[in-house]
Image (cartoon, rainbow, N blue to C red; front, side):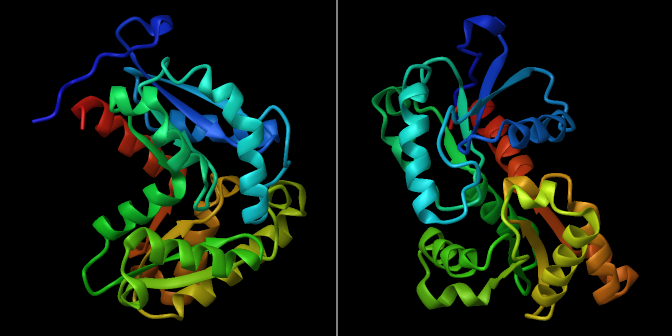
Length: 257
């Protein structure tokens, strides 16, 4: 049985505290996550946010992800004893996740750490039917191979991942473009990517493969309905990694796993 945890952040007395780490240096992307997290209404848990103080404005490939660690880790290491859970809000196999898990204070406190990529994949596999697959819609084309390989590595299944994984389709936009490009262009590219993904088999869940896609589930749903019809289109699960990550951490912190 797990050990129920009270919060350890002195600012919140007995409240639990989760830190959401946005590892690029664009503050507006962090700010866009806050109303999304608030919709969960975990009122007994405080959610704090960390934005990289410098470094890449947008994490557009694996090199950017590695570079972002240099800018985030020094500040994070000073506060790893203040929170009950940590979420890395970059949709990738981000190196901060294993690095933070290896920190002595995290290991000693059995403090849960996850990333939005890991959380969305795990959630998708739990909510879809065994005969269904999940897929990912992401930003630049470079992520098609990166995320496909990351799924295989995460599941540890090699080529067998194809039985549950439909693949990755991309918009051709980077994370900042999602908010800076003309809304109609973003909408068209998102919907086109979703429709391509839905053609890859019986897709039961679609992961939003970028923290910058927060709040874009409505256009994904619209694409599902256009492609599959009203009834089937509304059955597809849309998984936001930030929501999935915060929800998983809430359970992990409460249960003391």
